[in-house]
Image (cartoon, rainbow, N blue to C red; front, side, top):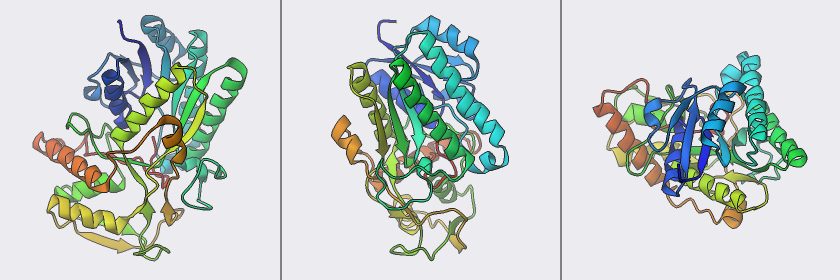
Length: 348
């Protein structure tokens, strides 16, 4: 291979597959390394697919020896918050042990750059908003705890072994590939945008709004949505920054703007032309009223701008992907476009 290779763990997943496409467009060859526990092999279109688990040091050695990647991008993690509360051992094994195994394999093979998929869940319940990278780190569930351990492990490796890194804390990643080639690679979804799309397409009878008495403009929770294509662009920028010798970074990825659940549903009704029935019920425990990123640092350091992250674009691309899947008869494995939700139910 003439192009530099990048090992993308979780490369068959939602964000990982979009990043693979962006890498290929910028002259890299992405190696999608995935155990397919939640991703889909059909989402791997821009480079080789290598089946493997991040906890399998022998398999990682084989793949790294074969492709000699210049960097790793780490998306492979278990992400369901409820499950993490019920089965924390599973999350520490996969997320923490898996990250350690990956870092050790990279160290053995002389790979000195990594881009890591973290989450706004490391902040816990916001003390202020918009949330800057200096916000206290107080995760409120095992999922968020494991991501914070993973972050700290990367920083410790950087201090001791010279690893260069970018850690991205996602807020609400949403939307689908602008050309319609990719959407969700999750096998199941439980987040705002895909659920709205499922109701719009008749796969669900109604959408449930949890909480209408928050201290927000219309009483419903406010979230910061960023288009997955913009996320992918940030990852490629971070990789180029590191490979050029740039400093290690920890950055939020969001739009600095929030939209309420009710606003999102209303706009989806206009774009889809569907009624999207919604019911309102009590708040869910642990849901903060507003989660909005201050992503100023990503803009200034990486020159990154979320140009596709208008809510209209996010909903339109999500709806186009959902309709495409409906036409293909897919109502299970590829259930519409996914949201990586900083309200701590699922953040990849």
